[in-house]
Image 1 (tube, rainbow, N blue to C red):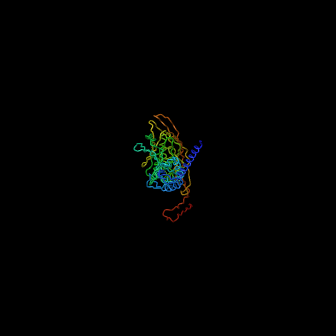
Image 2 (cartoon, rainbow, N blue to C red; image 1 turned 90 degrees about the vertical axis):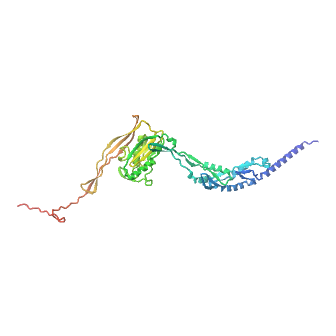
Length: 464
């Protein structure tokens, strides 16, 4: 008699036995220590059981925190990894190891010699990393703009240089990349930098080929303090470059005229009178620039005249400046950059506008002048002067209304005429001091009498 169900029972029993054996082997091997072929960033996990992996990685974290770190650009400045706010991420590293180990076939884990290399996972604390990075700011390099010089009648362009700024992201990436070489006696990495392009680059100045205009004013060489101020202001303007559409504020470029910044006391014009003030003489520089700008075709956006005429530029062609009150603002209307250069000699100041000269182009400045009514003579009493005497305190001067025109010619033909500015110079009254002090009577003396003997007069009697 045959029992077909016996075979099925035997097969099922064998299967259950095999499954049980497999589960037993899996559980047995799940708690088995890692073989020597399993490494994390070069550190072997041989003998470490899975349930002890977290504590093992925590010990490794403390060890790596003391890892010496050297910056390639400053090799003498040694730090530690913990100083950078970089530490081993224990949880992430443990997860990476477990996932990599789970991908190894069971038979290979039991019977083979698996080799496994897992990267360490790092955590970066941004505040600490940035704080450490700040200590290397001295490695940064500011950009240098291209410059222009005018020497011996020639334009010279000095090339630009890009700057360098520390890059947080690039520096952190470089450090984490260098940590892949662990274990090592020290970790060396390069700080990352971002190039900083200057505002004015060399190729932008190739169009500056010569002098568009120049203007010269003169001053007495003996006025030492005033001439010092002229030189300071002129040096601030020397080399200034205006790209197309850019503006120049004289007050911003020269800066405030203070003793702390090197300016000195010299005569200035205040409300029609000459007085001592810090920075006296800078108006001659602004007036010289004004005329050079007019002759080059630059746009005049803001300008004010003095209250009285000055002697270093023609009437109507001066430009006064004062901190927070009056400014000279010009702009570059061309499609190419221009450069301003200054030259101060013993008794003269020359300002040149460099750019792209246009042959056949000429600019002529013309003025229309009208004399204003002279104010009446002003007489003021002076008790120090005797009655009947007078003294001139102020000579007075006529006032003017001056209109300035700019005419542009090409090959002798007028192509443009522009009214630039209207200047009002107030008339200055003639001031005369009139004496009010009473005269003291002088005693009369007879010839031969003593100065102390009073004179005696007798009236003759009439004839009988």
